[in-house]
Image (cartoon, rainbow, N blue to C red):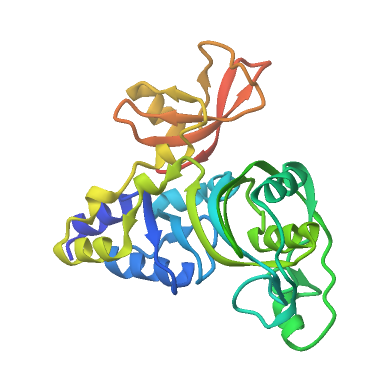
Length: 305
């Protein structure tokens, strides 16, 4: 490969929104992207369990530095919850720990769901990747140890029963990052008095990206073979599409790339929120912080120089 080609590949930065199939780990999907693009700098912004499918956001090139911001984005799921059975993992992978008759109506499920909306405390599943004294919780659980995890505050914006076909309920879940839908399934079963566990999960939205933005992994692999996978690459700036932006002139792009401040034209509505610095070509140049006393934007994270 020529030096020019290496430089070109190093400059590639953006987002691949992939419809992850059931049966693959999120890490395995990232490996497919690395091999297909030839770019080692790639990472996802929120793990989907192997049993789950749907929107997996993969950042490529310098855009991986956006991970901490994109990972914190809200998520939306369609969850299939089977009532009448509980498992030790809160999903279909675990051992059944109890069985109960299911004598609930759709109205009762809808009523129970309201208890989980808003800012609530949620205890993660014992079989999770949460760390306890340096070990993952699921490792301790598999060894037969008692696992006690602290409750974590989450936001559940909306829960809606889409379908009730006893004993399975399909529920739309719109929540903050870090929410365990498995725990929600288990907790819902407890409230209804019959138990429950998660048997299917599809992520329909992650931050700014929904299923309509996603490409099936098989199609992306075909594009890698053909060499036209770039058509699926979304500009890095769109990964934070809900952030305010500041368009830079050609001269300002050069200043910001070297860490220099640029003036504020109009004071921002939310002075505590950073903005995206965008070139006139739509490239994400940096993330900038507002300095009210100086009335300037200070680059805090520059994406290429």
